Image (cartoon, rainbow, N blue to C red; front, side, top):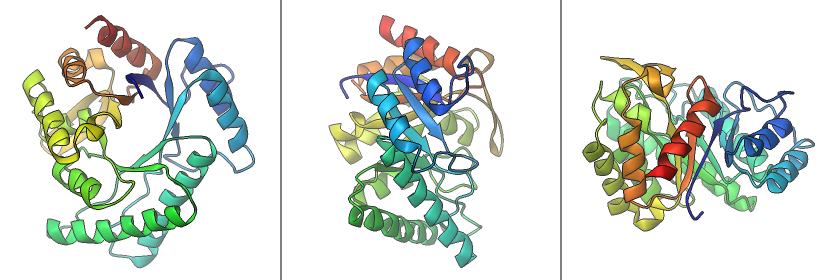
Length: 276
């Protein structure tokens, strides 16, 4: 990608009818360039429907990403839940790939009151199984564990970057609102946003900054981290400074708006970014 492509987390609210194919066409109609397939509650696109989705994305010149179901915990104490989590990520990656998607993100798991090193090793091993399976299937979609919004969730930036260094076809999904919420209000200045981007470049090189899958939204938070998403203007997130940092570091990739007013905030960010 030559630039940052802004898009929506799911079908735009103003799309009518509200189908995936119509949503993709509507994304382009309103001037955006990307859409995230939201499999957060279930994988809602069938193998039969996927080619139609792919065709719509290609014709509309819209880049597709995917968010796997929320019901994922690669560190569950129950083997059946780990197996189900692996299958949910695999099936999301399979359908997203059939749709022409380039990246699938997910919340990798919870610490479950365990030592962080042990949790890291467990999640790494399960991710390795996922990437190995997809490689055998000739599926090269990017697998993206996401930076998370609560201290109880696995996924601080160092953990995600280390996984990206150690495993093939794994790169971060960087959620800037989650950084802000996880630290109860930090990571909200140009300098702090730059610090994150510098860390990514140091660990993953320019490739890390030129192959980004990002989430940006306003967010409500407290001492325990993330509470719920807000629109950018309702929140205290200094999104102007974030966009300025992304421009300065020549970041490329996809920036997905997860705000309650998904397309309005995606368009707002795109407008501000283009003026910088």
